[in-house]
Amino acid sequence: MLLSLTHDIDGKSGFVHVEADDLLYISFDSMTNRVSFHTSDHEYFAMGTLKYFIETFLHSGYVFEKVDRNNAVNMQKVTLVDEKMGLVYFDTMPGRRAKKCTVAVSNFKNILLKLKSSNPDIAVLR
Image: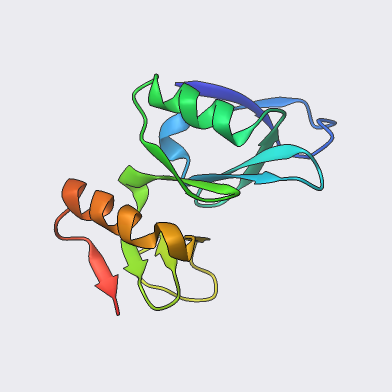
């Protein structure tokens, strides 16, 4: 499924087509009132709400789970969980440059259970 997104917040770059399968996580920025779409090497933007996109992805066969107030992760793309830091990674090795997303403390156990149920071998740092 292709999404029409922009490279810049104001849309001056025009639309680009991004494959939904390439998305790692999405986030909402209240300062710009935009949803950001993160892939392994780019960030894209669209108008709308996080709730809208989570629901739309769900009904299109994708599993995006809201992990904190402003972030939702593609559960099928998470490769590593850092329990101590409250992070999920989309790379096999954590590090400064690794793609990661924060998970709310209050939601961490629930997210970890869901990740383990779909991928029992997921790596967990404690």
